[in-house]
Amino acid sequence: MARARREVILCSVVFIGMLTLLGQGWVDAGTSADIGPLPAVPIPEDNPLTPEKIELGGLLFFDARLSADGSLACVSCHLPDQGWATHTPLSIAYPTNMERRSSPTLVNVAYNKALLWDGRAGSLEKQALGPIQNPLHMNHNLDLLMEKLNAIPDYAERFQKVFGTSVNPEALGKALATFERTLITRHAPFDRYMVGDQQAMDESAVRGMALFRDKARCILCHNGPNFTDSQFHNLGVPDAPLLTHPLVQASIRFDAKRMNVPDYAQVKEDLGRYLVTKEEKDKGAFKTPTLRNVAQRDPYMHNGAFQSLEEIIDFYNRGGGAVAGKSPLVQPLALTAQEKRDLLAFLQALTGEVRPLPSAASPR
Image (cartoon, rainbow, N blue to C red; front, side, top):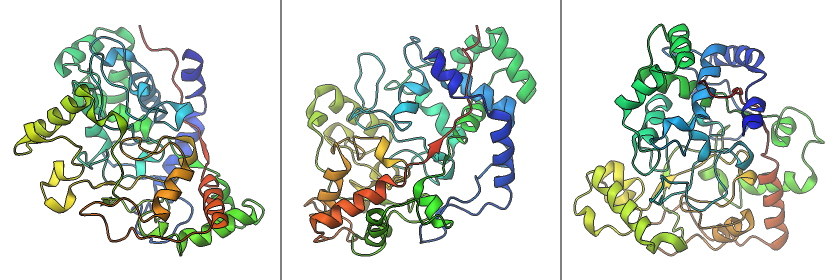
């Protein structure tokens, strides 16, 4: 893990300069319905990127002391070698608990308009503090954590240098968010093809791109440079095998209660976007994830219901699941075997390089 941390931060100064240049003149992700190379990285005016802040955020991201018992760090649910997610149907949970959802990828999270599967978090700065305090995740009291981090000389010095303050929740959220904004995918075969390298994608992938835009209907939801409409859809995803596990059911009820769902004790399934809006139409609707680097982060969907991209393509080819409230955008596709192979080839061509800004060993 120490080696991974070191490999995840060396090019900070060079990359931060690139991100700063890209941040000038950025247009909101998803404003274009068509797919194409990523626009400039969005950087909030009140949280500019600096090499020192990125390094601090990286240190915190890998530090298990952010959890109450020291067993989990942010990276525990967002592993660099697993697509910045986890290869498990459900995310890692705090000891004695179980999660009810898979870990969403952090790849290109800087472009997301809404965060988490149900969109309850509106900014990376705010979202970063949620898992730290959530009993299902890191289960730490935020006031106590501030005292602990301030007692670590290196952290106290770094926060003073970067923010001009002692360790506090706002600065902690900003540091973590800054690091996460550097997890940008680049140089995918698709991107190289779109800027004129006709050899970057083979013929199968090129045919798959045409299907993606037309017959396969993928672009209706997976559009824009980051391949997401940032909206929420009910696809009729089947229940995951672990849904009935008592600890998963407990987590579902707990989350429904803290989201102020009426009759939360009767809830037996993840209600998705409804947890936020309380609108009937949003039951079972989940955020459209980016498809960039999608080949790296099986299993798929909010509950890890599908193990492979081939399963996903078959699911959509059937017209999704048979459930009430399913999105009208999901229709049977009648793809041939060759068309399914071509579509898979295109999805694989969306895999680019992610060069995060690494972190040395955590401060002592």
